[in-house]
Amino acid sequence: MFKQMRNAARIVVGSISAVVGVVGILLPLIPGTPFLLVAAACFSTLEP
Image (cartoon, rainbow, N blue to C red; front, side, top):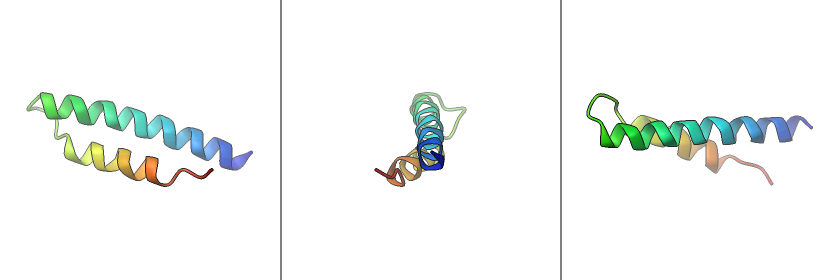
């Protein structure tokens, strides 16, 4: 149960970070690279 909640939280945080990262690449006000790195870290640590 705890692993499912942790995976769900990582998916939510990773998705939000990926969206903000893509917007940051398109807009010059927000740096996109740190958000994309956070998204990659969240998606790489998902457990089956």
